[in-house]
Image 1 (cartoon, helix red, strand yellow):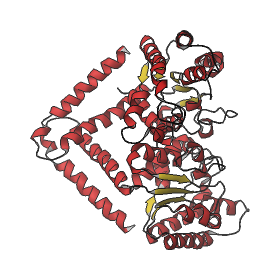
Image 2 (cartoon, one colour; image 1 turned 135 degrees about the horizontal axis):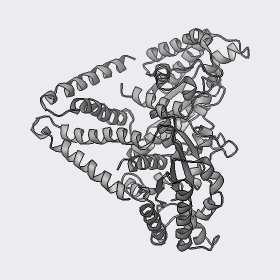
Image 3 (cartoon, helix red, strand yellow; image 1 turned 60 degrees about the horizontal axis):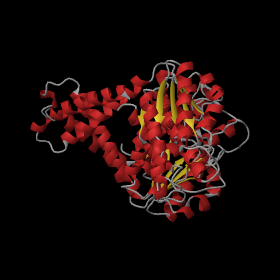
Length: 263
Length: 263
């Protein structure tokens, strides 16, 4: 995540510049705050557009959270029904609507219930063959959930090994690919998740973060975003069962994902 | 639409204020443009939040464009599958995610193929009984399309009469309701729509605008938004058949709808 840290420093300097740019001398209440948030807004627009190149192919991969009820008989790019009703639909619609001149091709290939080894099994068809320039992955919650429920035997060590192999293979087959690794998340105090999930699940989150670092990927910190969100509404407002996001949760994810691309 | 004009004037004054607030004297390139767009951003947040009250019930009504493949067996509020993959999902997710403290209840009750008389037939169950505080309607394209295709006999005069009756009944049964009337739209140069649609269809658009004025509704100018959008990408990028929006089109609609609420 070296590149990201450098970008953050540049942004910080820019914010500091605006904050110090003589605005304090203007006797207008509210202007400094306005300017700070304004610099952020301008930054978003510019950097999001710069991140994607002309004719980029973008792929969303993952489990049910990415799947979001998409129509698997019509796996078309840039198509509502092929996206379902989740964070990927919100993000992709926004990218297609706001960057019409880029001619982006965006796919959703999330499949409900998937663990990382199941991504690997369908990787040739559902990733490599699509030749993505940008790949966003969210995977891990089933690797822990199914183990916990006694429906699966492999531990976080297998998750790490399989995930690393998957990413290495992706980089080998598609050397120029840009990776976005999303943090798997859970919220306790919900219908399926309680406090006893948090510590063991943190191992999976740390693995995903470590791999993001190793593979120079953009890291999308969903857990932190949801933890912060619970300060304004209860956990069940953001995800009923602690795993699958509500509409509010989807919006929270879309916002966090988009923000991660310019941090 | 009297209230709207007053709001626009207030916004204009606010923009002028920021533009003239001594920023021209600061020798910092780019700041004036930044401030103008910044004022707009702040305005959005403030006004959108002000428009909705605590515990508001919000209802999206219309035809297939609103329906967007929603699951009609599970007509739950604030629920992804009950929203389908369209503009209403993008808007409602954003409202629920960004105004979590408001405790909003948002329904989608669009049904594919509906004309205005079909809304009227199910209005008690699908509007009045839900007791919405805010109602957004998009209806009209099938009233013209089905007439043109010889599958329906009534003209724009019936559309006007039925639509006026529906709105009057709504105001009588729910006196405090806030109305948002969306302009039906078409784009020529697509698989189903050619130039010969435009003039006759304009009658339906003028009727919808007239009713928005009569019923003091917020007016959402979708046609203008799509016409502008075709300057950056062809009509088929925004709607393949000229009637149903693509994902880019859904985003365009969501943006236009949200913008209309603070203009």
